[in-house]
Image 1 (tube, rainbow, N blue to C red):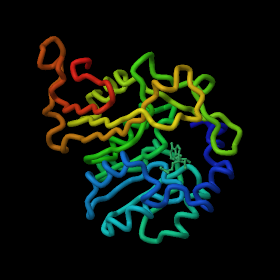
Image 2 (cartoon, rainbow, N blue to C red; image 1 turned 60 degrees about the vertical axis):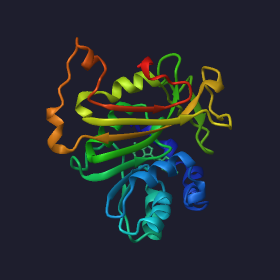
Image 3 (cartoon, helix red, strand yellow; image 1 turned 30 degrees about the horizontal axis):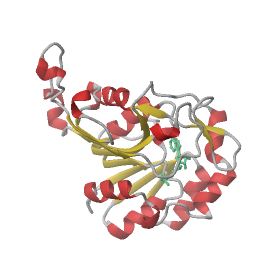
Image 4 (cartoon, rainbow, N blue to C red; image 1 turned 90 degrees about the vertical axis):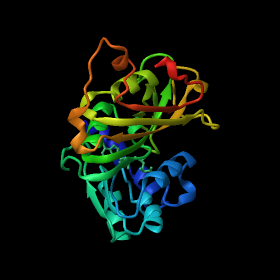
Length: 261
Ligand SMILES: C[S@@+](CC[C@H](N)C(=O)[O-])C[C@H]1O[C@@H](n2cnc3c(N)ncnc32)[C@H](O)[C@@H]1O
């Protein structure tokens, strides 16, 4: 990430929101869609990586429900990480940027990144890295739409980040582009699940299309177990491959029809 852009994440107004005001550190502050998936996937004895953990709000929530969870959080904002370390002794907090290839392949049972991925212009690299370091589940949220291409342009789809006065990316993914990318062979995905909805509250973001076309989606990816990854054959031309049967697909988005894809 270029240094000038990183400024957006270390702006004092943003740090204050997560350190002094403790945003998103209680269960009541999580969205229903986040809780639904987290409670379904997580088990007490797992290891979890939280990318963009801020000051450890998610750890504060999870430690009360999953006391045996081995939690690691990572964030670019070192002031948030210092606060997290002061407050929570039972977890590992790292200062740094993802992707920086610091973790070995399959290192964590679950990799989570909440309210972070829709601001990543290098989203393909990021998704690849989250999947690489997970041995099984990857969970993150994105903004989605059906019409027009994915928009990664800070001049036309953006929001002002906290009090920084700086535009941040507001990336809106075309659902079909995203699904095609997620079928990339090297991701070794066994299943792709997307649960989404049209949010009741209109976003404060500046969008280059009508706001009522914007959906929020929770993406839950499951990887093939290590020994089964090379056995999955992909090729073109035959119906069974065109149907992409190697990957289970569950898209629960309003208006999505299975045979569209
Ligand atoms: C909107 S906050 C979300 C915090 C928390 N995950 C939540 O759900 O409330 C996004 C966080 O991601 C961090 N971040 C953004 N890009 C990152 C990257 N590439 N690697 C690590 N942290 C990143 C920011 O510094 C910020 O603290």
